[in-house]
Length: 308
Image (tube, rainbow, N blue to C red; front, side, top):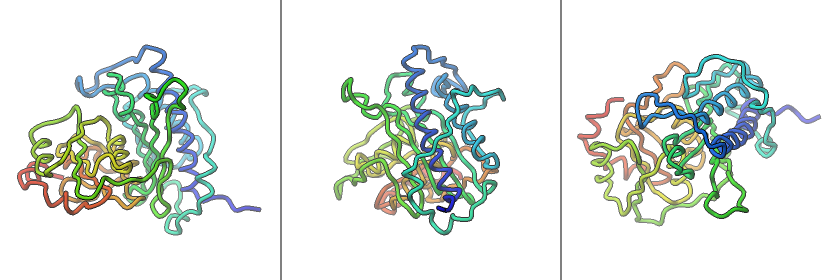
């Protein structure tokens, strides 16, 4: 009889199918026509019915299958009974075909923290910039992001009516990342991806210091990391508070699984244990390759303004 897969692999396999269901919910809310938009702290900080339903779906589905895992979601929602149709119980078998890295094979549920962003790029979602939108499920152990799942509900949405909408990317440190074609920006090209809706002088000064050949401004942390791993950008530079742990946990794990690096603007790694503050107050710097080049170009004025 085959042995039961390690907890981490079962959790990732579940997170994959849960993220697929989340993508379906995101599309259904949009096609229903009523986004149910609520302003949280202001016009750039929105919540929609998709944020609410997806968080309920992800958190309830994970909690049912893994009751002792700590789950932290972006949305502050009242406790309520979750409708059964939002619960996903499946597992993606492809994940379970990979042996668990030995350093993670004996992890217990209560040692894991899952960081959930039910809809990364909510503002873009409300504005119809659908390719910016992702669903993020990040898994941390001993404070480190070790696995992640990113669903893009609208991947392929501009390729015509017959296109299969959506895709799911997953990765585990020590195994790799899957669901996309790894590609690098051509050597010597400096393409910077940065915020679309949260810019300020620090952000623009830091981007300019990178001596970019091109600057891409898009929504969503998940979306920006996908740009790095698919060769559309060489560095993600965000010299401002604003990103939170649920924005960076899953993308960081996937980027690190393919040899990239994500840190704050000082080069400090993020901690993802359940007690940490949620805000990444010293910004974000991420690259697939050549991290030290970009880190060395961050101006001192920017570093002094952003305290970890």
